[in-house]
Structure formats: structure tokens, C-alpha cells
Length: 309
Image (cartoon, rainbow, N blue to C red; front, side, top):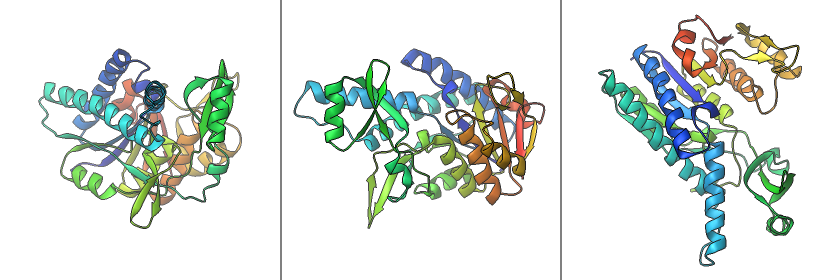
């Protein structure tokens, strides 16, 4: 088998509607097929923010229309979104590979990720999810112990974003990958769960998917962690007059950039944090940041941002 690579697909690989996602997943599958052709052993993880929000809103609305049902827990909605996105991805990748004469099984694993009940994020929720609510619905959510925040048109629920500690299905992911299969796992950061004896209890939270991508690469001892975003290279102070595109970055430089305001909280910062965590454990590893269309060239060191220890 070739080198191990964890490919993290960002929001640009999907869409807000079914047809849009179908089209974007087609582009993502081409990038994945290019990577497979390069001889890599591929494990894929992906964003699911829009899909999770859609599923959560739909299930909540369903419970409002039929009093026999309660709103689905966030962990269940996360599992649904993993299956839904994985289904689209694995079929598109399978087709792209077969059209190139490559015969590989593509599998999606519903993945649970361990988080700590003592993670400070549970007291400082930051991830916005679900539909826009009016004041009455927002008050009802707060009576249930949930957090809400003001949003355009009303209020929206916010949940914790704890740190990923471990991935429960890592052995299955590793076994399938080592057997030559292409594996889709830990979608949307994985389902956050709290370990209670022999029971894994779904947490009302959303894990930052880039951090889980870094944890996945670390546990698999992957040679490369590849972030596919909407830009060919990462940039400091993106969208400002001080914007600077990055080519080669060392681990120490990445640590400095993570602290000096170079990256936005909801943009490149989580990817840099994941890169630091991964490279600290895998000192001979490599992080590559680029867009889907230039993935092959970036792996050939012709473009993209590369971070090494």
C-alpha cells in the first residue's frame, strides 16, 4: 500500500440543497480519485454543518407537527447527516474510480468520538445550529436547559464544541484502509459521546471537524493530512489589505500564527490548530492545504500551503 493520507473535505465540497450537493460531491469525488491514482491509501472526513442543520430543523419541525414524537437528539441528527453525506460521497467516488478502471470498495463508517464531560466548552457554547426561532420558542429552549443566541430574524440555538479525545471506531477504520478500501469516517467531526461505564451517551454538542481530522490523522499515523478548502493556499489576515498567502510553513511558525490573530476562528484557525496537534505527534508528517481542483498538484508540491515539523 502507498502512503496513508487523511483528506478533510470542507464546506465547498457540499451544498445547501440536494442538487447543489450532488454537483459539488461530483467535484470532490474527482479530487479523491486523483489522489487514489497517485497511489495513496485514502481515509476521508468531511464537513456537515449545513446538513446537520437541515436534519435537526426537519426533525424539530416534525415533532412540532405531530405531538406523538419528540425532537431528535443532536447526536442522532449527527448520525443521520453522516449517513446521508457518506451515501452521496461513496457512490460518487465509486463511479469516478470505475470510470477510470479502478476497482476499490468505498465504505462509510458512522463514527463516534469521545469527549470529556468536564470540557469547558460545555459551559461556553459556540456552535450555532438549527432553525431561526421566535422569542417564545427561544424561551422554551432555555427552560429545557439549552442555550440560545440572537440571530437575524430571531434566535438560534448554540451548542458546545468540545475537544476530540479518541475515536471509538478507529480500529475498523484502520483495518478497512489497510485492506485497500477507501474509508469515509468521522463526518462533521464525528458524533460526540460521553463514556458512562459500558454506555456511550450522545452529547448535545458539535465537534470542530478540522480537529477531528487531525485526531484521525494522528491515530492512523497518516503520512499526510490534506485539507481541501475553497482556496488554493492558506492566507494570513484573509480578506484584509494585509492578506499574505502561505507556501511553506514550519510547525513553530504555525504556532506563532495561531496566537497572533492571523486566522479567523471560523476560517483557517481550526485547521492550523489541527495541524499543530498532528505534527506534534507525527513529526515526519506533512499537512497540505489547498482546494479540490489543485489537490493532485499540491501533493506533487507544485502549489498549496505545506506545513511540516
